[in-house]
Length: 442
Image 1 (cartoon, rainbow, N blue to C red):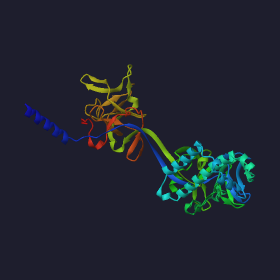
Image 2: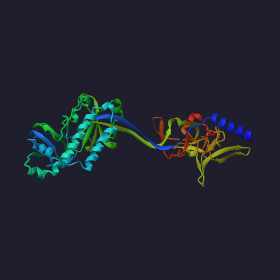
Image 3: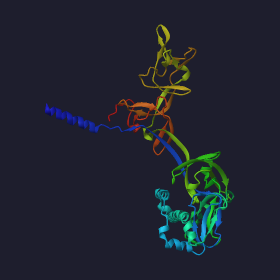
Image 4: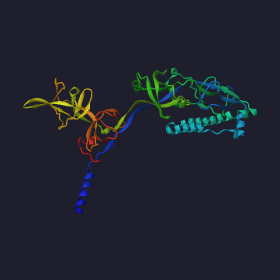
């Protein structure tokens, strides 16, 4: 008896190991987003302010902050006595506030998340920006607290206020006066780009750019377009864009212009998020051309199947709500009709789709009558539907799908479609490995 049991176990294990194992996939919700990456040139309404005199520079407003008209932005210490006082009295220097540290940490985190060896030169710009920001925060906090002490020490320096309101930026690159009418391909050559960032404590000469003022919240991103872009964006007035560095998505007005070099350029116009990019001239961004959500399935799970098609006008609805067709039945006593209910795999505005299997109540050559009895239709024409094999019941059952978008070996199909799939359904991963009705061993 034990020997027979052992033989049976060995046989069962051997059969199981030799049996083809069908892999399955659990249907889940998902989306496919198609994005095109571009590098654009930022244009803003900018006014450069030059130093009113020579001396040592001190800032009162942190970079990227808005200054009202009449607000002190910087001061010039012609003798260097202020810097000497701060050097001799380190106890008077204020430390950074929690909010200052948080903003610096955010700047550094954004750079780390988008770092690329290809753009290593940007490391120097980031270093300069961080250094300037630290000095500005420290100086801003210190100057606000030491005004009385400095007056008592007889330290005199000249403060200069903004003559209009706007966002203050200390990054100056000589491109502040460029407008849309000046666009040419040369402007997109980053290898020649240079900018200067003045810092608290720098010694500057009279007439040297000391800061710039951004006087409008509206700004533009200009980018070169190829033939494919021109064709795709024809008659488009608005685009969805994303800034991966900041994880920001927004809508922007879109227009096309021709540069002075005869090339075509796209112009995105925005009125938000200007503050995040005040110190940048070039900006990498993505244009989202398609964002489709639904049920996500592998492309290789998709197959096709032919179905008989019957015009929707022949579908009969009974008083109890049941739906089917009036099939003609010919017997020795004459021709009568019989109400039959083949399984509907799909129904659109024109046709009902029924199975072509041999056990279907309607086969090729059969006739169905219209509900009014004034017309008849012969079963025979077929159309193919796309679908997958559902294996929830342990065997392969064809379920139709409505593909919406395909990318990266996956397909997004319509959710909650009639006669279709639901979240968490199990389907065959590779449709070519099974046949409809086949038992599935998992």
